[in-house]
Image (tube, rainbow, N blue to C red):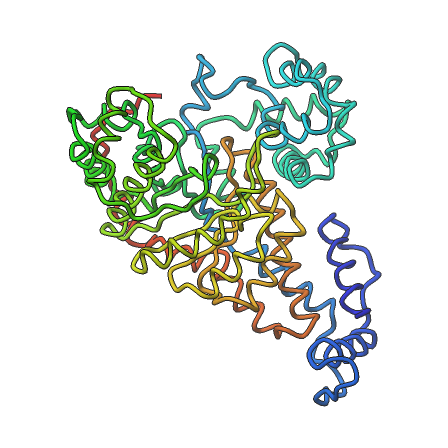
Length: 502
């Protein structure tokens, strides 16, 4: 096992930009390590192993370099973001989305939750993520808590973004001015294309807009869009989904017509449908006939209370109506699973059921492509079994690389020797602000390269196997699952008819 440990150590050094370090595994050590590894890992202690060649075709260091070079030069399809439109970032005087227009924006969102979990008082937290303090004062607010969070995946992603975009290796009092100047300089027309395609080598993103069911993007082939279905069934969202259609909703069939309207209008342009309803309940949606929920829907229209059981049945019915409509339009169904964003609200006792409920969804709708997001963390072993067993179950590793980089790396290793390799997509940043995507993409590249390298070092893959898997898991699978060639062809000449309000 020595070669595997030394190889992992060598890789971790390269991730920290110390490629000039000469302490690599020698060919002789590699041969000895690979020989022992083959005997103990593949055949068990004491069992005879096949004869190995007298001289290995490559050393551990060569594997690392070859895989790392391949991964770093392979583009991503980013399958999950919440990115705000570029024009909003450049002109948002009302601060609808941007509460602080400075360098602290790169530390917002997920890292903001780590800071609260580490003990930052809410009053300090509010000051840090507001316009109440200048750039240097913000460092003073952050400094006491930074040592507690700086090694988490959330913080490492932020630091990698700072380095790639502004040339700052390590955030400190002496360089926040440089970070702020870099932040201001970068934000100019065209910066989304520069950040995503030029810096992060991302061909396109798939955006789940949080402000409306579907965003008519001004960058349609860069920021491809999901159609949100959560408000079609959860609630349902009578105002947000009903009002734009102009349909007078007086019955359940009228609401079905509302759902039909959204698919007729945007089904051709959307790459998938998306629901994050797992933040509110398990994903155990049971097929439920309309006649069982008609009365409940009328109570909902009248704003009268309904029981939890009635609410679930109504949601279940409308979920399947939306999912069946998505299937008609050949749109994959993306579902949040596992970990919650934020703090002090996650019920693990419910999350543990997500994978089991995923099985029931796949069984109930074999013609539907289900994409289970975030690897169901922390219950990712169960999701491996779902993807292996169900032909219509797919896995999206979005967000997972910064929740727990080591778990994500281990998940990918296990996935590739467990389930079909064409059913996984490996990156989605899951951010509002484009600058944050940069660091997450780099962490994902590090993890993918390390997972493949370890699989070769441990004897599960050949180097050729690992290199051949890189294109599919980083972009090829996504292109196939989401029919991106056809979508790009439609979107490149799109002319939106609806107004583009902020």
